[in-house]
Amino acid sequence: MLEVKNVSKYYGQGHTRVTALDGVSMAVNDGDYVAIMGPSGSGKSTLVNIIGGLDSLSCGEIHLDGKRIDDRNENSLVELRRGEIAYIFQQYHLLPSLTAVENVMLPLTFAGTRADQSTALKMLEEVGLGKRGHHRPAQLSGGEQQRVAIARALVGKPRLILADEPTGNMDRKTGAQIMALFDFLNKEGHTIITVTHDPAVAELAHRLIMLEDGKITEDRPTTAVCG
Ligand code: ADP
Ligand code: MG
Image (cartoon, rainbow, N blue to C red):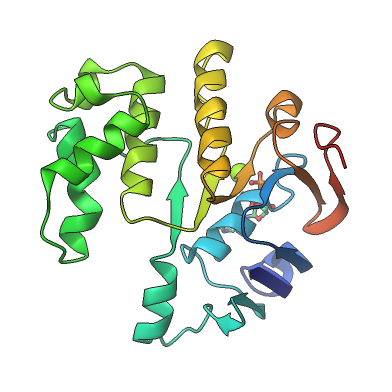
């Protein structure tokens, strides 16, 4: 279980201080599928960045299975738990000079695992790109590039997938392919937290959290879930 406990985030100091998150608390169970919505500037990206360890918090704590993962003096346990969280961006952040399969292999290389092409190819097959392994990003459509980025996020076998507007740059049809993939991954047992501004995307999640001015104003099951 992921627990966000009374987390606040301030940027700047004095009269230029901005409160991006103001005492946010939420608990996300394993296997949950959460959409985060809210107006621009409400703190959505800040929240997922802090959960993903891309940004530090000002106050509060983040726990994974009862263990803190927000420690500033990054010890190896924190690093290990962080490895269970994967992050998918709106911009895919693929390396242009590498092929799809090489991009997917990157996290394995960084983790010091013997970088194994067949593992990466299997991930690409899972996202429907088995035949595109040797293409470079420029030879792929936006939706295909995002699927490569998702395969790269999945290769480390994360329990929790964080995404910030993953379909933000896509037309509806391509976005629907990505959402179908999220649905599949959630059914396979991955916990998903995704930021979106698209109500149709949010309805595919099982739970909707609304942020406004850095505070949670609503936290409810979506209508898609019965019973
Ligand atoms: P959202 O993703 O909901 O649009 P953000 O989390 O990006 O909102 O931003 C929340 C607030 O924090 C906004 O007022 C934004 O201007 C501010 N903010 C975000 N990042 C920074 C930063 N690096 N420095 C200063 N202010 C920031
Ligand atoms: Mg944002």
